Length: 259
Length: 259
Image (cartoon, rainbow over all chains, first blue to last red; front, side):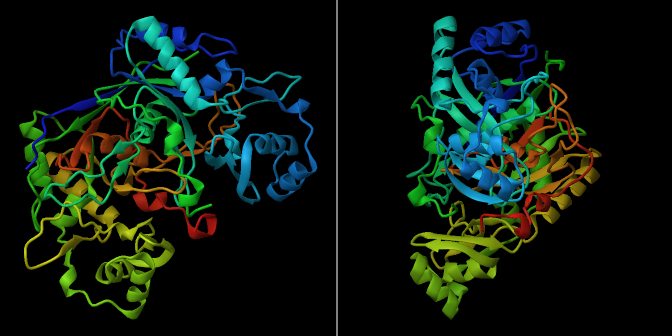
């Protein structure tokens, strides 16, 4: 019989975040929008922030017109039908190429994330007539999350969980899902090892990737098109104070059977 | 500038679902618990139901003591250090073995899901002294979801989205996440192809696996240990009336680079 009391999680959109430009004080803009929407941050609140606005604030723009592809990039560009300058950037941002075919270039990026095109984005990037801008992932998303967590603590006095998410494809399944690429102020993984099930048997599943689940929940409200809702506030989920960064969500190569 | 209004999604636990046995009227038990918790179902409500209670109601129990392993099952049991009777069941429930090593047997199950042990569960299954029970996945989770959707429509008059979720491991990443294995009454995939981004450019990401994101959101509240919260109610997420089952979330083999 269920022994738990009723509980609920609320996922709030935070409209009114302006377009982000390099050097913007993202924390202050988020706090202003939180206030304008009459939302309240407190200990245990979780902010999920889309990768693209972190990358913009950190000036991770690159003008493709400045990129000279190497011979290797040209080779992969022919194999994948992709712009050789973009391929050059993808290779610079990556440790290794995992799979490629026409239209597809899946890499392990420099943080260990396995994803298409090293997460380099041409959409939601403002263009001008003379340049051809793309946006790289944050250099170190856990560090970016930690910086936001610290700034929010300084500005509000509250310990707020911060997740940086991106929409990432998966093996075996269609569609992308929101995935945690940076985490601070909460545990990315809920460790259930040693816990019993309803009948005192050992659990089949022993680790739950809660930061990824929170990142997916937020993605439902962020939208990926022109909604412009990069920040989501999650309330009601009990944060585990033992901090585990998003890098711990990456399975070490020696334990991974799918590279 | 963001043009959207404030919105929110609520994820409610539904305590008080009793332990489920074969043949139980799961729909009525869920409706009773919804009422007891003073929650209200309406058009567009989404119920996420853990696979294990569907399997129990559908009597997907198997007593390992009745299973005679074939030579192939014995071979894989030696390669994986698993009970040969369990391996026999896993093979019966699967189209093919995808990867194996000591302690690990990853298969494509008969529905096309790629997962460890064909999702067969020894935890959260009531045992007795004479038998050794395990629980298979529902035979056809989309059909199970559709059946619940239809019964709820008959009992309440409301069109309620139904997702059956399970905690499933991934390539490349540690930990499991809630994943949609059966869907009815909503679209599993949000198709963004042809939509523009904030600046009128084409979107990088074109299909969002929203049923998986909803399944993950629900998993945050379901717990996997002894919480006994198999049913979650999600309100505030706009359901797309074009129904797309969970089977459409499975990437066809010819498009999958990671088998």
